[in-house]
Amino acid sequence: MILNISIIFMSRRIERINQLLKEEISSLILKEFDFNKDTIITVTGVKTSSDLRATKVKVSIMPFLKAGKVLKLLNFQAFNFQKLLNKKLKIRIIPKIKFELDKSEEKADKIIRLFKKIKNND
Image (tube, rainbow, N blue to C red; front, side, top):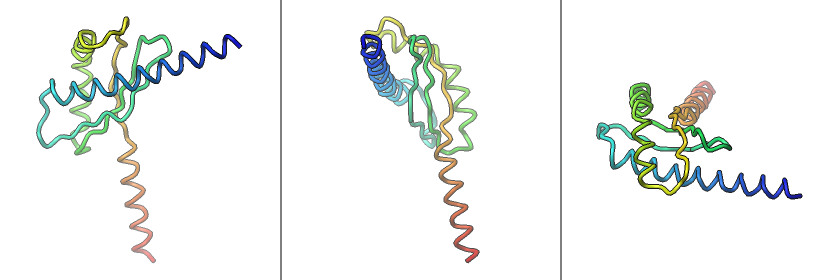
């Protein structure tokens, strides 16, 4: 019983930390980093390890053609994100950040194109 309560407590804590990091990283991308006006970056999810040592930040980048370049820049700046978060948040450990591309929008676009192709063939 005690084990179940501690697992529930930890999972809720991780969820709260994920939400906090998502909000703060989104804000930092918007305010602190200079990306082209024609590039839209959205933090779509954050997944932090149970030991709070690492976090994966899923981002959606539009236009998709610039995704590789922007993702590379975000990962290059990950340590700066960590330093800024360390100043701003009252968390004992700021997890090591790794940015990953969220491809769900690309997959959705592909599905829509397939539906249109099927509709046009009818």
